[in-house]
Image 1: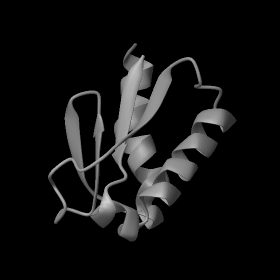
Image 2: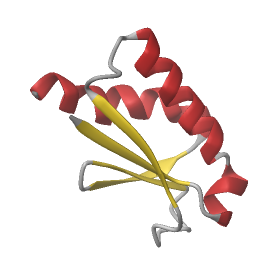
Image 3: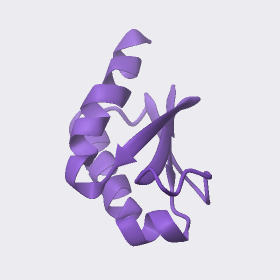
Image 4: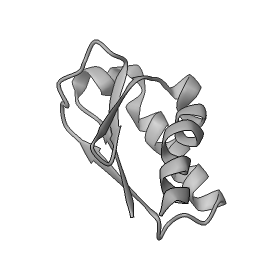
Length: 84
């Protein structure tokens, strides 16, 4: 199971973190990955200046935004799912 955590703290919320979560939910559902990806929300992850903060398992991912959310999923999440 790959764990994807997206920050929903004040700064990330203002930058669109809920839209990122929604995009990830849609991709997970479309690809049937509900049993392979655990999508979680977290309050401040301490990297407020780097776009929306998120991490895949224990790997921090920077410069995430709602405009590139699907690209981030396919670049950082899907490869980990395919490894398992």
